[in-house]
Image (cartoon, one colour):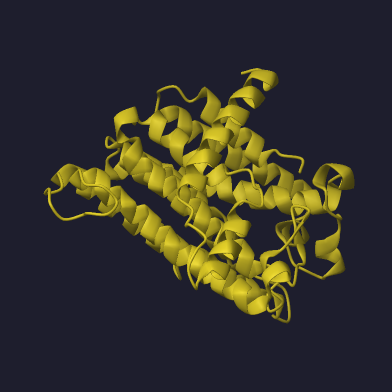
Length: 319
């Protein structure tokens, strides 16, 4: 696929995802209005919407139909809310102490630390409230009345599997676990073990990518357990390669392309994949992981041209 064609398709798909996400944001009213404003500020502050894009493209790859979009769309919004909450908390003074993200003031910098914490908490909880709106599709009811019509067992099975994946990959056995290990690693004296760093990358970075692609496959309704495990492995390779590339860019990236200073890892004495394995090995491992991920993707068959290009652009990005 030519770069210009890919970029045009990506722009159109991203606009659609953006519209879907915004449609699920809570209304800013009531005595809790401030925390809702902070939540919405965080979600609408920008971002590539890669996780919901990956979810929808995997859904399409496995034959997901337009009539099942009411089952999918709440999860598209939910995974972006979870990703955003993690950034809101990462930016807090107790964590990374960042005052700006994507050229805008971070949530705590606008609303204060306490409201920044609450906004992150609110987004995490509201993500699951949003995902559960898919029950309306299962039961044939509207958003206000969820009781009258029995839900088809098949739809409920898909919904339950998707919720289990989202909950685990976002929690202590997923992203939160990876964040914990990362914080402790920064305080650790001595070199990190390679397995320790891989644990951090797998759980902190890859877990939500895994959740996105696995949920897309599950909600399409045709992926058996073996296939879902293959999707999980594909997404693992993507997530690890993505993070290694991030470490590489901190060494060799261009400041103007990245939009942020390079060399910050070395300045902060942070141990990365590059500092442990060296630049040449890091670049080699990105290629190995990429080839494996694309090989798994191609084994599924179907129309995967755009998804393949999306994965390659994600891994081989220059910013």
